[in-house]
Length: 591
Image 1 (tube, rainbow, N blue to C red):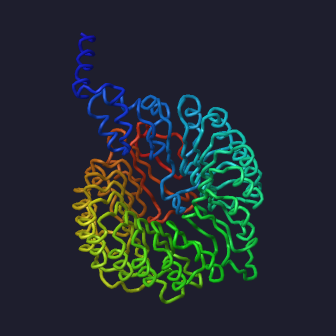
Image 2: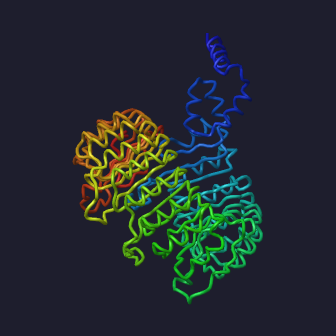
């Protein structure tokens, strides 16, 4: 009987494959890159699931505690590329305690022992110790082509030296925003320059790692394929030889116009040399006297990052109006409405725009033009129709501005808005109708963040969010709603929502639990600021199979304000984690 059943399954698999041989089916699946599409394919039948397992080359594990490396290997034994995340995103804003967890050790040991085809590894927000890197290098040095330690901590420059010396096929080494010990030791750069000739991307931007111009120039001369170089602070006049040698360089970030943290005498940068291939640029601490360095190259730039500069609103305008071919622009809100109007008039090819909050104590932000309101928002919406990603901090906002986004920015797949608390008065609240219009118009949205002030989005508005967010998979909401009814109304929609983050909304534990049960696609929930019970017992209403619930109370040695208590809940096939610090109480599973 078992043989007949197995034979029937094989026949059913062939029928569902429409006669396509397994080899051809695997090749076709190889062209399907969207992970949600691959997941859907794997659910057609067991036969397609097996073909998917053997042909899947890349997987992203969005939560390291959601599975085990052993289970992942059994499911995808032929993986060539893996991206693994651990600490919640809130850790980037110091909202998660340092001892929360996120060790890469169990994963590194298993990856090194069993993932025989692994060539690319991306670890994000994880603790990676020196021994982890030693194990990885011993097992994978002969085949590793990409290693990204993204916002990681726990390792030193000695381990980077080992990587540089041993991984001679490495094409990408990414260390951006990682916390690395022994920062003054830059021998690893020399080792990389002398041991590797195929490197295409080196990124240690925002790491405080020391980088000597001599070693960087040696690296560029020996690595003729180098296309992306993102470094820490290094005095720009000392990098002239580097740029003259880097004829293949397409992206540069870092440098500095200050020497050893001290301003230097004014220099003439009008004739500074960048290679003609350079199209993406981010410079540190550039001010009025140095902005001329950009002018000869501005028309060719496709990406420009001005977040770490000392420029006024007018100086932003002078630079942007020379950059008609920009596809990506990153700035601080000192650019102001006037600057965004120039962006709208000039940058018709713009696809990605990021406007971060500036430093309130910095002189440039005292410019009365250095604030963003509905005026700048509407200008960009109407003038930059190709935008797919838009993150912006505003000081004022109206429903009409959000409606303009919904009407004009139809290509957006990621929109994030933060309403700052600088202004005592906001022109128009609540923003319910504007949010409804935005979500109705931007049908391609997959990620949506709306962090505002109390009163900016009512329970009615949350109902609109639920109704018109059918395709959104990630959502962050801050200071929204008026009562528990708001989160309940939201949960009746959001059919595709997999990851939800809430902050400062003060819904009750019971309402949050009911919403989590109602959101059928939800895989991850993080909340900070809610009406908590003494022990978190009301959260038990959301208990379901494979659903881990953790109650986080930072600062166990002192009373914790209610607005700092956190909930983290996520699907896991690995069961309860065993490395919880005292600040984390696992509510379910209990053992």
